[in-house]
Length: 311
Ligand code: OXD
Image 1 (cartoon, helix red, strand yellow):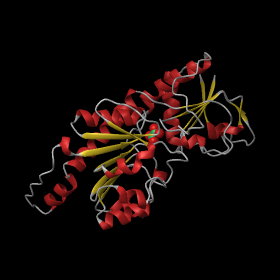
Image 2 (cartoon, protein in one colour):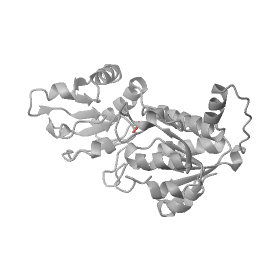
Image 3 (cartoon, helix red, strand yellow):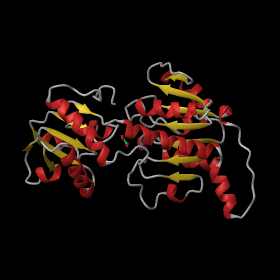
Image 4 (spheres, helix red, strand yellow):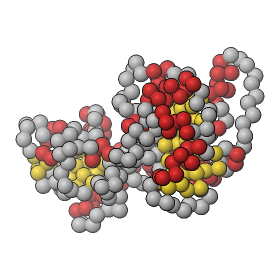
């Protein structure tokens, strides 16, 4: 089996090739860019990619499936010349655990008003801020897929009053579930909003000025879905007006976030570089090897994406 690998940085691609060489020793592994360097096309059975250059996958002859190095597949489905083969997500306990940790860390940080405490410390000011206990803090999780459900359950376990928003109506123990049509009601009760939606035609630009204004005044945002969900200028306005008190942002319209972007230095913004549930080559290679072996046996792995739905 020949596998073409791609990540936006050559050293990242090299790390994945090394990890997959251990997990899938029977495969011939090549960097996608090297395979296509001569121009024209090249044979490959599978492509394992993060943000492949548009049009590149169509130049792989005999391609049987594309594996996203991550839970999201929007970066693959965005290719206008995408070959008509199955697209697989990569999901596993490792990714879910990372997302649980990220969401718990940042929701707790906003809940206990850590930014204000850090600012007080910088002034050597003894400032005892009394926040409501978790059961009186309303948190809303947008997106109840594998990662969103796990994050929402973690927040329930911490004692928060948790609601979730999903495309289809859902029932989940301890979580007040809202269907997509009830977005205004869901936003109106979310004092801390966690965005873990996939990027689809329906969710693109969802967090615009109008939606941000539906949140309770002084709400906080934990944004780890996709940069394209959020109107970044509208967020800056909402931070300036006090509509949004604090934001933790892991994903951006342009990544890496340009050095002159106002988010980097904004006192009410915490920037993390798209790592909320970043898959590492060591554990990811084992999951991807499993998916590729299943494909080679003719069995489609469970994490098959639905191009119509967009995730
Ligand atoms: C993913 C991500 O899709 O990290 O897995 O964004």
